[in-house]
Amino acid sequence: TANTNVDGMTGVEDLSITGSTINLGGNITTADIAGNSISLTGALTLDSNVSLTTNATNDGNVDLVGALAAGNFDFTIDAGSAAVTVDGITAVDDLSITGNTIDLGGSLATANILNNSISLTGAVTLGTDITVNTDNANDGIVSIIGAVTGANNNLTITSGTANTNVDGMTGVEDLSIT
Image (cartoon, rainbow, N blue to C red; front, side, top):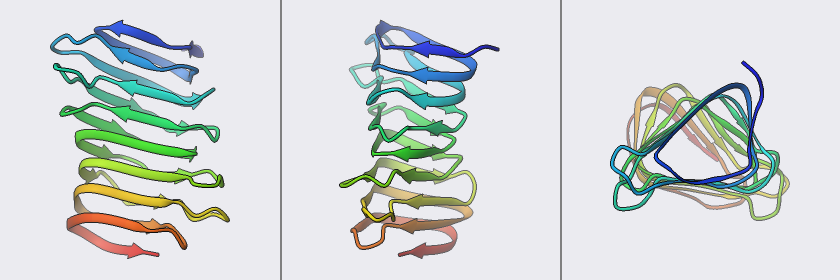
């Protein structure tokens, strides 16, 4: 499969892209149609601040199968009351993920940028041992607004001197918050 460049889309019902590398340069918003969804499979990179939105009357799932290198840009996923699956994200400035459920299959890390942050809003499930890291010279806030289910996996949250807020946890094997 080849590289795929996406500079933004609106009004798409179902979007499924598979490529060795998927470069995202603009926002993607689905149409307000039942069954809408976004599925991106491959190594992902950001060329600018990007939002993936399926949140409307008819919320749709968002699946990222492959790690995302954010390139110091902001990244937002808003699936409303639908599910979000993410394999891992690195070098993000501000990360915001909203979904009824958020399944993490890889760790999350911010870039060393002033006021970086990670915010997860929804019930979070750990698919493996997960590290959430905003600890750089510029420490960032970590907020998990929703219960975390560990499935007997480890969770490490490192935010340095910044605040860490977590609503609740069950089934986490080893927990470390620094």
